[in-house]
Image (cartoon, rainbow, N blue to C red):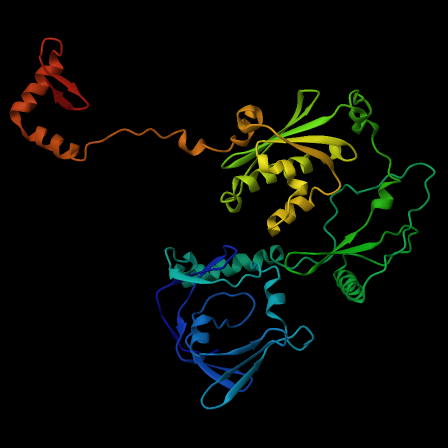
Length: 429
């Protein structure tokens, strides 16, 4: 570019996803033009991978008050006796590439722009290479450039072709495509054309057909998936893989009433599922940081709801009893729901037929123990004892005193015959 780069101490750039790189100098008073609006800044140089320049909070501070419309991607501010309007890149603008799409590429970035600057504690080893070492490194990279090339086409033949064995007598599985929104239709056609271009897929005249489903990824792009559920119905399964299922013993006692005993402690929840006074299943869960500050009532309510959801297959369609040590939960379904948190938990109980009964805390020994499984472990290895602050000074004085050193030597030589004893390096009478 021909820019003048000023050497500065290396700074470490960290993104929100943990990626780290280092700066390599600074361009002082660099002039940048944005929609005929010229600004001067002194950016640090580092490998960004996507956009050419990031203007952060330091530049925004110089503008003072701004008017931002996030829907229209516009920003307006008063600068040198005139209004300046900046237009961002919209999704419909095909002549520019959005910053998000740049960062979503496979270039080491996760789409995060949370930067922090700090003194570099580690220099890049490549900065210390000599000219000859740089040439040797480039030669190695050129020799193995196929390792870093973009993948095109199918993977190489590994001598074992994949095959799906169909049941004898089954016809071709042909499922017509789903009805897609117009947005999905365009995305599917685009991805198919991309895969045709790199040789991953090809045109087919097979009688088999399975529909396509688009699943949104975390970076808001689409992943194409094939719905093979209809094909799986015609696949022959190895009988050895489901022998244990066929030999599973038939449950004999499914008519007895289920009882759930719940309890909550400071850091966890616990529950026991019983039938005819016999424990048949256990449940425990540690509380997250956000839930530690909740009241005893909310924790007990959480314990009841999570236990019911955990054993949902056993409880749906039949009446059961929930036992809790929180007396106020006994009339839960008749209480006036006040907070949004209560509404959220109570809504999860809709569809279940149950009765809540109160059980004093001293009788909830089993579930109480389960709720305390996750607490106290961090203190089990700590032992405390009093310690004298001046003990080091006393030991130093003893080492410098010839008379005390002589007494120590006599006690250690014959502790039984001497009137003094040594305890924790102290001389006792």
